[in-house]
Amino acid sequence: MESPDWVPNGIDVTVPNAARMYDYALGGYHNFAVDREFVERAEKAIPGATLVAHMNRAFLGRAVRWLAGQGIRQFLDIGSGIPTLGNVHEIALAAAPDARVMYVDLDPVAVAHSRAILAGQPRVGVLEADVRKPQSITDHPDVTELLDFSEPVAVLLVAVLHFVPDDDDPAGILGWLRDAMVGGSYIVLSHGAPVPELGGEVDTLKKLYKQTPTPLHLRSSEQIAHLLSGLDVVEPGIVPISEWHPDPNDGDPAPHQALLAAAGRTR
Ligand code: SAM
Image (cartoon, rainbow, N blue to C red; front, side, top):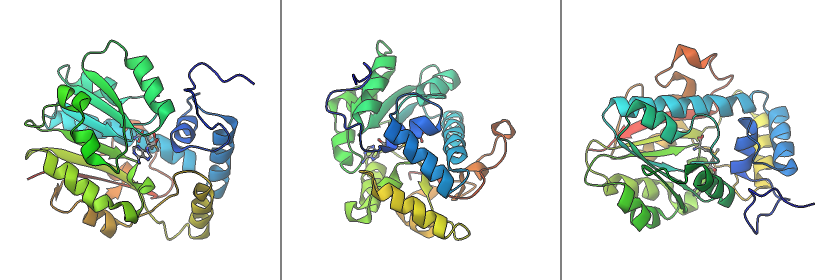
């Protein structure tokens, strides 16, 4: 069968992939049967997993609006995913027409589709890069051309760091990003956390993710606090995504607390 024209060359359509699974969970169509099957199995393992993807997207939107309200005009969205509903540049530009947004993802489908929908947008850029090599992002000419690191920047790491194992030094990655930015910048994240009341279901989910190129590395609130060391974590602290500056329009709270959110301000 021929691949649709949005599929970049060399994509393995037989292995589920985090960007495409998330796209399916959000109702997008840049995904394959293998991704859809994975999401159905994940939903069976943890009923509400798909809803949590929507809650995470809502958190991302609230975070961007909140950051714009703090005067932030530059956004570096790492692990940005396949553009779907409520993309960062749409929210940022609606809140502040002078905002600039750089999207970064490792996934070629996410990057290709981002490039396609953003062509001709002067205030928005796209880079294919790996968060595990943060210097390759902050030093990249496409990034330094769009973003001015002598002014505050918000780095968004939303639902991505749980794909980074301890061996890749996530604290070092955050330390690099923190030190690349001036005071008054932000790092905002959401991160998968172990949920004691789900117990065995989380093990099933972790087993499922082991079949993908991005196994899950869940971290507790204390471990996330450690990742944010050297930053001032702003109110309300490290909390379940639906409790981070909640907006009644976002609907019911997440069915479980599997994703934690936080924002840290640079000194
Ligand atoms: N941040 C978006 C959001 O929250 O709506 C998308 C989150 S999606 C669950 C995770 C994204 O992280 C995927 O697009 C995946 O390709 C990307 N990703 C995973 N590992 C990465 C890495 N090492 N470097 C950059 N992006 C990565």
